[in-house]
Length: 402
Image 1 (cartoon, rainbow, N blue to C red):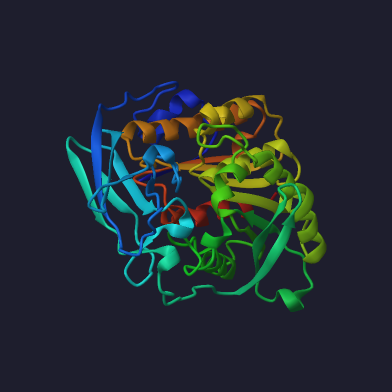
Image 2 (cartoon, rainbow, N blue to C red):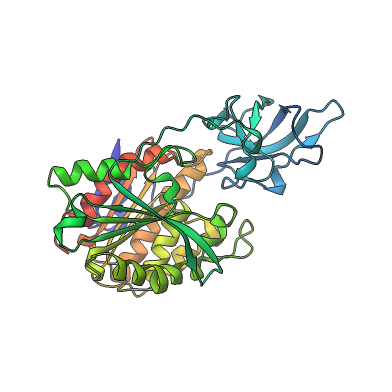
């Protein structure tokens, strides 16, 4: 069950409305720690100088986390023991330090996240079949529909690098002569095509085709910006954190505003006004979306922030929101699942963080009738969960008059 509400009630009443055991300032007590052990067998082709890491929901999916590094044993297997809260619903994959060397199935295909619930004496045994950089070329099934155009090597001067853009044009764009609203989205590899996604796609193209055909949404241009692989954590974070020692989020936000949007407005027939320009992302992409609209008010008039990583930097976003001067016309969608994290206490905290940020923004001038908050019952931190909530978010952002 999901609770979806315009943010029109005092915060002290939200816990009752959401049917959640939350109250202002409430914090769940963490469960006792247990030791989870790993025993991993790897292919004979694994390099002699390899390092093995566990990447998962417990460490922000960091593929080279030194705190989650396995040790090679004399018999060639790898092992490690790590503390987790009892009952933690761990999701993970094994890597050799990067997503370019993540484990694959024997045919080189994508593996679903491995899962285990932490308990006393939990032992995880894994047989790695293949590594991505050694895998045979998998059979690729593209799922793109519509007019999707790639712009490769797009310059990001604020970051000193380049990136691929994936731009979805609406039906009839070449002949209509009209101008269109624009939706900018992060993590473009996961938006349109299962063949390029890491853990499933959002089906943005299919969703828009359906909602536009039914008249629920206006036709629009979608500009997807590929993430930077190893640089994703830094580029999507505006705050320093123990996992993110060198944040680049301010530079990324400046790239969106000062380089990308002006180029899109010059190149395509857009409605360039803030009222017709939206920004959306999930997890760290949700965090950087909100940071960008607060850092550059009046550029993006709409934002959708799915399962935002408001924990980064010791919950710095709450302080930023409490001091912000948002555009009074900003239309904002925030959501969170109530099973986002492995540990129940962490999931509880993620929900509370989202409500706290929403309330801080309301107090700083975001109009209650332009602020939507959704707590999605049973929803986890996954692409499929965000894809399921995308239609409601788009309707909220674009259906009403600006």
